[in-house]
Length: 169
Image 1: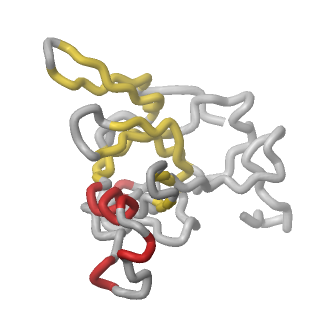
Image 2 (image 1 turned 45 degrees about the vertical axis):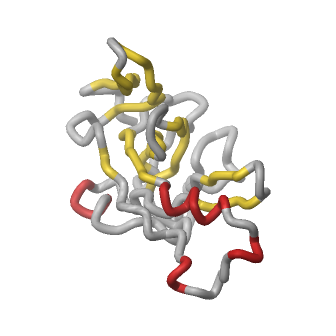
């Protein structure tokens, strides 16, 4: 990002050479195929976030803390706001605005399970990005991270760290 004074915005003091955007990938160990989860939010602003998905890695959210849902083909993960300049880096300021999202990956897993000769990468009918759009599960909570699934009375329950307010730099 370029600021008004011609300075480049950095993600953090120790990570100054890193780009703020990370994508979420899945590796099928049996076939050796890797695929990017494409049905992730493109923007941290709620009105834009779920209407569009990031397809080229230049969104305003950086992803992390991905965990599998224990009884379905979904992934829960944290999305940090990377669209606004912050002066403190992630090393020293752990409470950046963040939300927890849930993405279905049925089609991507099906695509990755096929051997390379079974798929036609140029065929739009074999498009791995047709999974349903993501869902923000913490929309009313501005700070949420570190999702984990636990069994509670036989049910799969998502637990996470969160706060209604935090220090804003």
